[in-house]
Image 1 (cartoon, protein in one colour):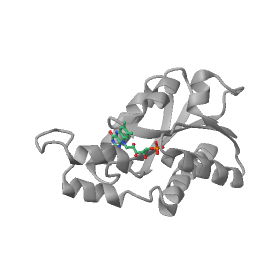
Image 2 (tube, rainbow, N blue to C red):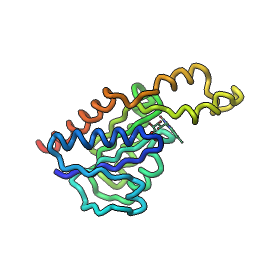
Image 3 (cartoon, rainbow, N blue to C red):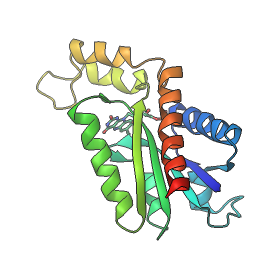
Image 4 (cartoon, helix red, strand yellow):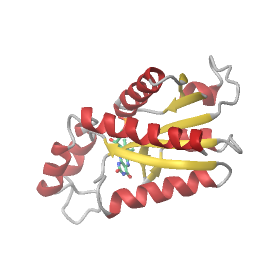
Amino acid sequence: MNISVYYSSITGNTRKLAAYVSEELRLAGYDVELLESLDAVKKRNICEQEPDVTILAFWCRRSGLDDLSAELLSRWTGRKIIGIGTIGGNVKGSYGERVRENVIKEIEQENACLGVGICQGSVDLKRIERRRHLPKESKHYVSPEKYRRVLRTQGHPDQEDLDSMVSFALKILRDLHTC
Ligand SMILES: Cc1cc2nc3c(=O)[nH]c(=O)nc-3n(C[C@H](O)[C@H](O)[C@H](O)COP(=O)(O)O)c2cc1C
């Protein structure tokens, strides 16, 4: 089975996730190609035959896909796609569930979604710093409590996050074999 893994990443979290998952899937015997979504959108160095399975590695923006991943997805039809993503918000609980549901809907528009898994990514502190000093009434204000949560995201995705995404993808791929 051949698999193309496309990743979009600004600060490196999703690149790390995509590279790790690709390597582990290769070790598990799959034929894996790792590609940058940006290159694919600009059609640089992309000579891809349609793969058996596409993995779309995205970062979360506005509780859904980042723009580059959404752009790439809009060019595909009829693919079997697994989404794996890093998010700054809380993975567990209702927020994480909402992100997963949004991404599943986006993929299902023209393609078959085999599943979407998300893990914690580090939030860029530079991006948050300015928002700590906004008026408290501003919807972008980051309170001390919120800032403490952001600090706890640092260092993610960690080994446990990466391994959980590998297990997630492997389970889907093995289930495909047995279908
Ligand atoms: C412009 C921007 C918008 C973001 N919006 C969200 C969001 O709506 N929800 C969320 O959970 N994380 C959000 N994040 C956090 C990123 O999804 C998270 O830090 C991710 O791991 C970044 O991945 P990367 O390092 O591969 O770029 C946002 C980050 C940026 C830069």
